[in-house]
Image (cartoon, rainbow, N blue to C red; front, side, top):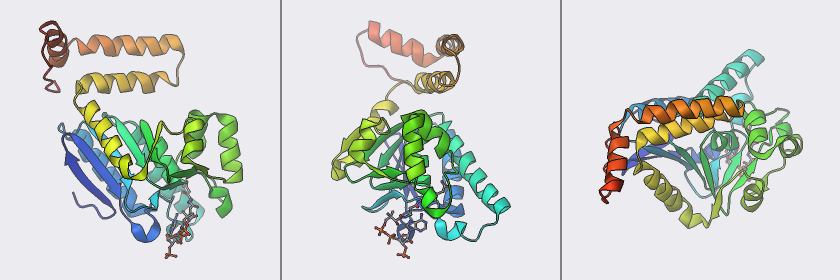
Length: 260
Ligand code: CAA
């Protein structure tokens, strides 16, 4: 993969993507979105990658937002295209067939908070800060922040954060449900990768179908959500891994999943 602003490696079934543009605190420019889109396409097709961890290079930032130096020269139509690329890429991240984990190691502001919220799980270091400070720039969130923040923390809290542009520290982010766990900075990535490894060791199609049922059910009524679950549950009985998983339990041995 020809990536400029994201480092990528795969270890034990876990893909680790590191936003790496230190001169701009890993801010998201067009090139970074191209990198992320390419990486997601390839990771989704690579059957050896069973979970994804996203983090930021350096000690200061996860991602400090959309690249303000790129945005400052945009006209309205160009800004719409820029935000469409951002929204499309984050929708792709959200829809990945494997679980995704944001390991937020520092500032996750604007587009950075939006990247984290497009992941399934968010863990943060005690140095992390989350916010949507776009109103300070005469702007508003454009990569899905108005929608995902409200869904994560509730409409009133999202309004407070977006109207004031105030950021919250990791402890507050956990308190309001934006973050699952807060770790000392030097333990964050290890913790996130361990969690991803555990997920990678489970039956991949079962994890994928569970993710689809959870995501699909989040925006529909209970009966429709349960119908989605029923379909997904039944489909798993067509997989070898379900046979193997149930047999291994009955035979009192560890399961060996083949992703099939
Ligand atoms: N875009 C471009 N460059 C950025 C950047 C961004 N979002 N954030 C930081 N940088 C650059 C700075 O310009 C600076 O570059 P120079 O060294 O060349 O001057 C470098 O990164 C280091 O930043 P600071 O000197 O500002 O570092 P700091 O420690 O004093 O402050 C910070 C850190 C609080 C994160 C501060 O950099 C900041 O407020 N950044 C902007 C955050 C922001 O507003 N994000 C939202 C962007 S808009 C958006 O994301 C819209 C959307 O949803 C579509």
